Image (tube, rainbow, N blue to C red; front, side, top):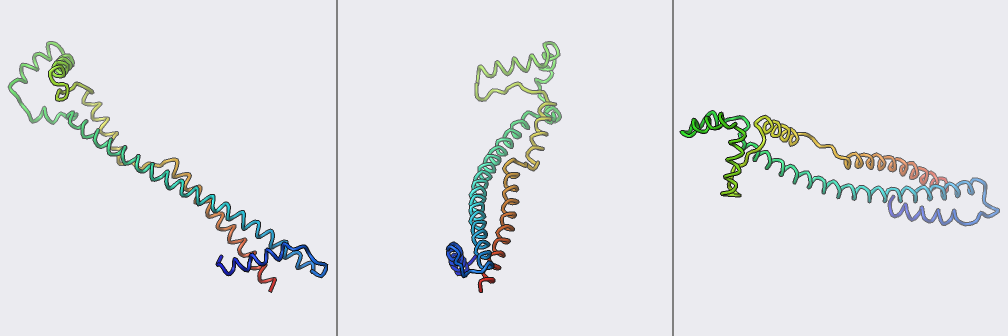
Length: 195
């Protein structure tokens, strides 16, 4: 509604609020009531529109925060994938590296158990160097599974609850636009009937 239209509308509303005179026709009284009803509806729609606008801004802020959280989570997940890939879950190191100590270690592992040797070596190394020590952890199948699921999570599209709320707000906004259009048309009809 332009400023000039708003001014004319406000004048019509003020006129319509006056008590009816005996010289008024029934049509004039009906038009005045129509104008007052349309003005009340227009006020209600404006209030709903303002509320929806505030909701939209609130949802935008929430969405920005969720996107920032998602970005941080993705970065953390990418870092964890890099660390897990160092575990050599595919056994690439066993295919390319042959060291002189391998035969002795293999014999020890066959005698005591591979897990026991790995665990003991990790514990002993940790006592010597808490930061640089290798650690014994998950089996190769678990490492591969974790890497695969983490990469799948990174490549998937995330649909969050706030996106659904934003869609609902857009639908409500569209409905209010239609109602506002109807009220504006009634308003124009009321103005034209007064001329």
